[in-house]
Image 1 (cartoon, helix red, strand yellow):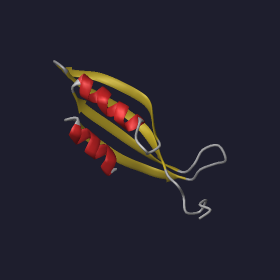
Image 2: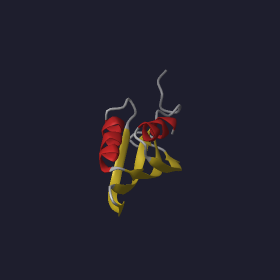
Image 3: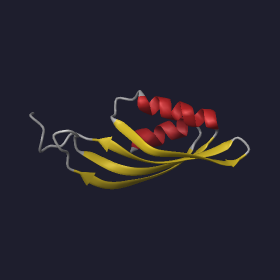
Length: 93
C-alpha cells in the first residue's frame, strides 16, 4: 500500500510488505486484505511510524507484533495485519 510505503520512507525505515488474500467480511467484521509487514530502523522512528498509521484515515490493524534487536540502535518489527476495505458487493451507493 502506497500510504505505508510513504510513511516508512518519511521515517527512514526499510520496509518489506506482502499482501495476502482478500477476505470477505461477516456481520461482525468488514472485508479486509491480510498482509505481512517487516520494518527495520531506529526505535523512535518505528514508534513514530506506528503512531502515524494508527491516526491515519485508513482502518488498519496489526497483530502478533514482534520487535527484534538487529544491532546498536537498530530494530526490526515483524507483524501481520489487516487492511479493511469497502467491498462493492456490500456498498449501498
